[in-house]
Image (cartoon, rainbow, N blue to C red; front, top):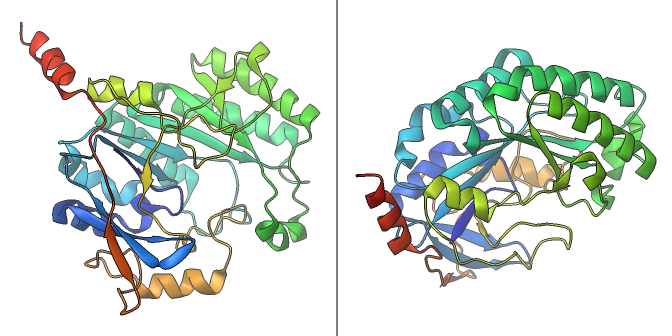
Length: 318
């Protein structure tokens, strides 16, 4: 099975100690977001976990402990945008910390295991079309040697973010604007020998050499892990999403990055409460197991052909 860590919160940036504690313990508790009294016990044993995909805007807290992941294939989805603190309120400096962290992470684990995400793309008076094109080129200059591809997406206007974005006059690009940006980004990416694709976007940009991303990507995992996976598309994602199935171990309303476009934080009071309830030694990301909770073991199994993996490794001995 594939572990997603996590679409719901930035585990590498804010909960890495908890994650490594859970990895050592061999399991994690995950509350059902639709029924919080239902808790799944998710195994983190290498017997059933085939790989991990991390999602982050700042992996710095994990960099000194990556050797603890040597027994399992993994890669990072690293979001790095040109927005300031008006949009991404609590992120550290892009120039001083995040770009160097991207470069260091890639140097440590290989460019094939660090996917650059430039998303979501939003527009207002400050963050104009020209601004994005200029900044995309600057970031390509800095990151091209440290990643193979960039995944982009355009802002989805979820109802729960309207009150946050309205004061800044933020809009999602129109179809024509999205296509113009995609054409410019594609040309810049080609100059840097970088692939570009889109995350969960229905629009066809293939004439610009832009395909549809699989952010939890079977082919990339097979390449990194040197095995074959028998796994299907994730039925719980949007129709335009190409990801394969995974189990997410994060929780909503728990990310302190403060990004105003975030779909996973929709109640600031809960974010504050959940941060206060976090215990790095707990099997839960936040809170405690209560008398009304029902804990069930999640049925899991390995989806990789370990015989193929063994034979492939053996081949390289000769």
